[in-house]
Length: 354
Length: 135
Image (cartoon, rainbow over all chains, first blue to last red; front, side, top):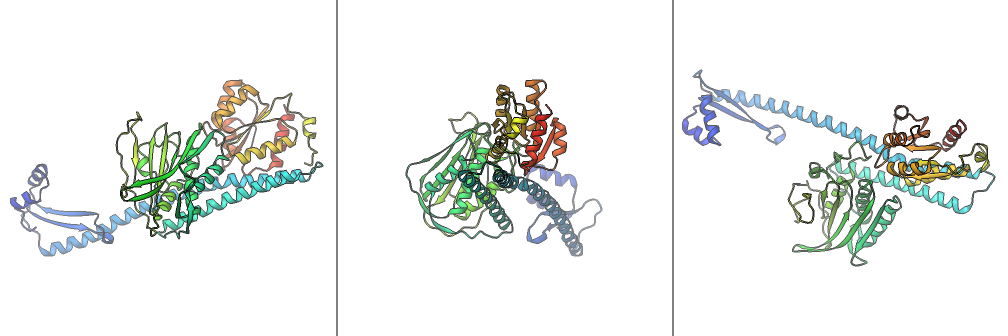
């Protein structure tokens, strides 16, 4: 804008305050150039001339554009560097936490082997029943470690933008829920895990192993984050909606809940609730992976939580066979009230399908 | 370490009914520690979290506490503080940790010894034995 006029200011101003501001600046000539590194605009560089009486020329604009190009790159590099530093930090935290997670099953394997060895070398012979029990436990622990490793390689794949290759097969969600619940019940005495299902069968074409992992994750969290114990309910059923019938699976606990501020981020990789980070061991990848697995099935995962009362995670899966869908970016927000709770519930949900 | 089952308890004993309290939240590991110490003829009581540990300690008056540092509800530090509040002079604590700062944490809570995960059971038994002998 070689010559800034009052009419131009009127048109350019976004508010009366803005107009006043433009007048106060006394700008007579003006250039605006966008900052666009890597095809994504990140800002605008504005040049203005006031009292000097000089006016910008096309040559000035060329110079300004060149300056903007360099400034955009500089800002972008600084931003990328910051991102990278953060990624390295979260990766380190993850490594620490992951090695901690591997240690318990490893300790159980080593302990069981040593226990059997000690017994085998004693005068009183090791009886067969104890031997078999010990070996079964070693197998369990190795399976647990293998599952952790599978999960982490899925996470690594998803992070590089690769999609999981879903191994869809006829899966009975009710049977799966009972099976995973029974396995989880083995790990705790303080909790009662109850499976509620109207029917014995709810069939769909899903990746059984990965859905078991999703459910295992939700149940594991329910146990972990309700340290005082209590009932954990797994409800499995059909959800009839205008756009079709969904299989629905909800895991409800009576635990510590998730702080409202963390709720919109709880499905983000490495994000952990401020009430548990550093206090309860965890890697912050369980829910992120769960979300991606569910979304690749064409489903949704949502959470409702009430601090100190508990959380409910709900998974919806399409019952009709569908194409694998790419994971989507979650859109989260707070919505208000359910009357039966005196604390405001906060939701974090993917708005599509809702 | 090829003590025949029961020999250790005859030589050192764990007191008339006073148990060793094993506090560990991982069920398989808790069972293993119980088994290996029971093989030595020792009386074992277990707890899965910090609060349970303090409840059991108050009623059972354990001669020794084998304590995992990272626990739900109350962690190892809280448990030792609770023991001190209950007993004045708390029973000796053998600390088990999964991270690399075991020595520092043992000092912090005043444990007489510490072991790192994964546990060497021979070492666990020997350490428990030493503690009971020096009582």
